[in-house]
Length: 369
Image (cartoon, rainbow, N blue to C red; front, side, top):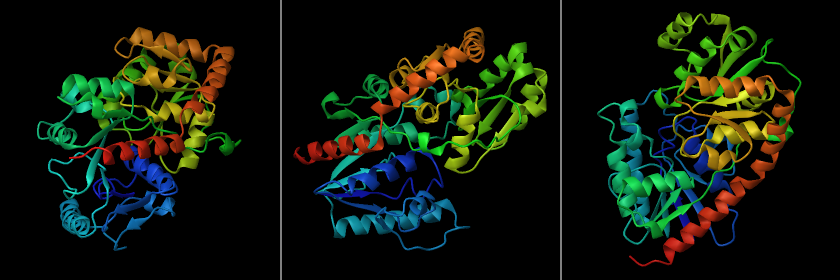
């Protein structure tokens, strides 16, 4: 079975959860018996194409630095459509939500729904954002839909008119090295809680700052180390100053997976106060690095974490403060959460994700248009 992944996410993200997801599954599906895989991205900005050298990529190898995104997208779309018409694969797995069908008539289309955040929290996105419209079009014309959690599947079926029979749940795996990445190097010289990823709107970083400011225990004994998501904004720094949080207790780092591993391993706890997650990869990353997880009790997070996290209501500052302080004040609880986490991550792997995704492809090909 020939499978093609289009260019869209690979010409939009240098790094990111969605492009990593496709890199992980494509790397493994190509090794399954009976599968031939291609990523069609003539002009590519994605760094995973370099760090996953076994990926079968159709690329022109041209340096696109400085080219506008609209030029890259337009060029890629024209070449990929022509390529697919000339040599139609059995499966086209669209890497993001497209308003119109990319695949030729003979191919079956697969789309992965990563979350329903745009539909559930539209206030966090600009009015011109057309993600919801494109998602609706993509899922309604796809032969099969993959959701990354039962929570996301439930939200999808509640919000959009989709046949439940064509929706499958396939959980993610964890991409960080985990137990093999132990190191004694310290990134910072004080105890800290870790926050990983973007800090916009629904990620509720402002809520974590509020809790940090209201808790003398946290404010006097810990720092917040943020990995990724860009440097602190002026609004974040103003909020911290208003809450009497010392600037030196806000630390930002970014870099490779090796540095991310060190962030998790050096943290007293990983705190994930998000209001909504389609899956929540960072909780698996924290568990695989023996970091206790304290997180929201919303959306997919209880499904992913099971009994391996201490939960709080992200809408109630007192709930968040109580849970974080409980974990940080108890070495025995932190050890218990670490042990539970190491057991929990055995339920999630990219190999299993790839195999179950391949099963979805087979189901799609068994259905006639």
